[in-house]
Image 1 (cartoon, rainbow, N blue to C red):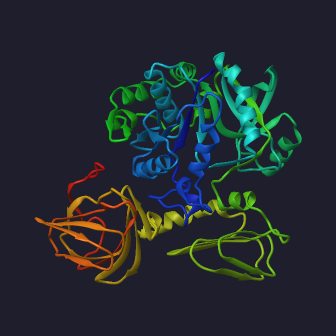
Image 2 (image 1 turned 30 degrees about the horizontal axis):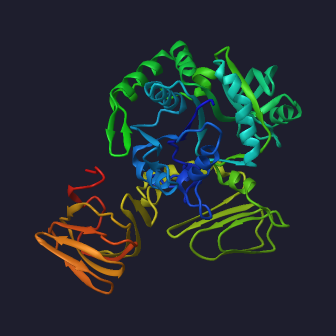
Image 3 (image 1 turned 120 degrees about the vertical axis):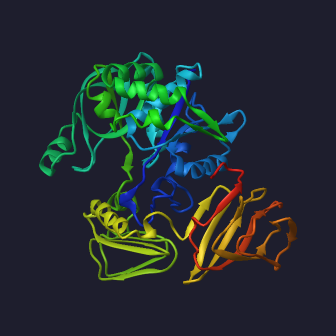
Length: 474
């Protein structure tokens, strides 16, 4: 049976999906009604015939988010272990795919790479599986395949692929690629039954894509080869060489290879497919009520039509709304007319210029040991809820500017303060003076919940000096 290596590209930042997507918590890891786009993508491929555990390529800042989700899906176990490669910087899809191909060849197997962005929605699953199976035989011959989605509307936000002659059953040569078109051009492409939306999903042998990269973009081939050859293992992660990888130009695989090679093919995908990069795309992908409204969370609408309202933490209500979108999080609310979702990126630039914390983190922040959430923030005090996973521990650390009180709300806590060790049960507490070395450990089998009260002249997260850390953080 042909071996398929799923390659999940998870380096995107999702800036147009603020305020739900943040710099340290991007769209592919957002909890969307109990699941994430990342998890949905992995589930889409793990049961394909011949599929191996996936290879994930992600930003180093997001490594623990990816690892935690893979662990939750039982994909970080011996014998069924996904690999996570950390990009030191973003350089678009061509360098990322080159790294994946070198990793596959380096393992001694010239597997078929099934390259998927981590932020797509595809239904039904059967349509996706059938398209992949049609691609396998042609990819085995050395062709480079992309998946073209059968269009249902004259979308101007997607590129298009024009098919040529049929090469194998359900596989066609590519006559041309079309950049994101104007509205009139998009209508003409929709009317042409030989045109597809360019999905950005690919299948090819690792050796085949490396051969084409070497021919058309030798700089990417050389930089990726050096970066991979100098890779180092760090816990559950593979760190490629930063200096070498940074030499890559920022190019998509389409620009770098697919638009130039004579071996490109397209496989039609007739499915409900969405590239969830804007709130407008989320509106299109959501179920609509009789008035054309899409809602997520605790939402109430009266006399409103064609709106998208997304609530995460409270009731979001509207009266007499039309063609509006609103997204609520505990610390920010975005309101905009439909059709202007691309401008969220401009708003984010303004927030960056003002150095607003809301662009990077939520009030709830995920860490490899669990999470913490800010409940109250004052000028010289802060109250948080910390959840520490069973068997996990915070680093041995010290703060220059704040003291801390810890109250155990649930579970059992092992606390080290300087040379003193305590075991705290529920409804007991301890105090960590300013400047004292300390560590929090969960020795139990259930989540440890701690109410943390910080007090001091400065409460920033950069006031941490780590002495020992199980997760390799500085």
